[in-house]
Image (cartoon, rainbow, N blue to C red; front, side):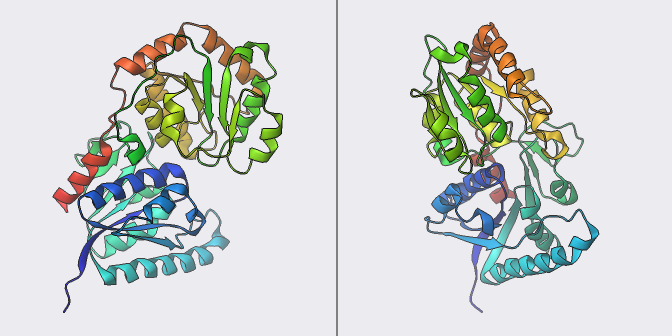
Length: 355
């Protein structure tokens, strides 16, 4: 019988917050000469990090039919059908490779891989990106070899480890910090899909004389770009999506953004003060708790208005920018080790050692 090649199976999809750290781990395993099979969703096929990952030798990306967990009884038949199909896709890959370990990056796209691994007794690991553990991670945490945490959690479980969130290869180099002589450049980022609230905030900001001397760079998201671009000021830069995020982060003075784990880690890597606008519909309000951790470290402020009001948000933002808080946050983020930034190495080594 022909000996099968060893491989690590990784499942991540749905949002950049799950995909990007999964890709970071995949790159880490490839550097160790370990083959990777990466499971994601069909709708994520054009996501830039996945397009880049597919160019590497030693990796196979599978777009499978991982279904969202149903909230209504009548959705269960479709859920069962797609779950069976996705389990079949995992099984097909298992026939081809000797699976060293499986890694779930959180969210429902990881569910089929983790379920298959549990029943087939494949060692599996979890990466929890947020301050509050998601439902899928909770389901599988007890039997996981390790649960790697991006934020500290109060737990007595010895296999929970605070490693940080894996950073993409772009962010694994040493940052060159531009020290501003004055605060005059704002970067607004709404995540991989953009954020309607932050786009509205920009339109309100450019109506206010306070921001006449500020340059604003806004990532609108592809769906909102054509509506916002015609309204921009001449000196501002409006982009549908930022691919070279390290360059934009290092060249701004302050970041306005959502509070997804991946975004926060990249902001901390760049050593930038930030004003955070947690996504109000995040499961278990996890973005607020992510933001709260950074606020408690003295490196961020939170503007959390529900329902969102761009007018009120601009008033609060002006208070922050005019006060001593901005300089205090800039000093704190430059001096403190706010979050661990080597998870991409630590997790890869830990998985290979234990598996």
